[in-house]
Length: 120
Image 1 (cartoon, helix red, strand yellow):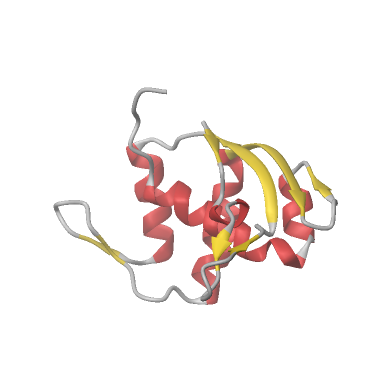
Image 2: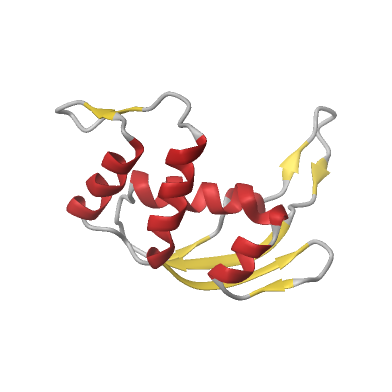
């Protein structure tokens, strides 16, 4: 599944002017199964109601590290470019660039929350 991270989308500032995105491109993700998603949720140590609502407060640093480490296998392809023109083409590229920390966390949280499949 192709996914465009929020950090690849332009934002509006307080004056209503468009601010360029920090990255451009997309990431191809493997959609996790029910069991895989709940294994990731379990790693975070959060509660889940019978309706499937995840009771997530602010996860601690250890939980975030575990989650990012365990979701990397769902990141199949990276096709991103930073605003300065640097190309990122692998999970390792993301992990070694501190400017990509928020991107890795976004990807991990998105994978853990799961996807609603629909027509493409």
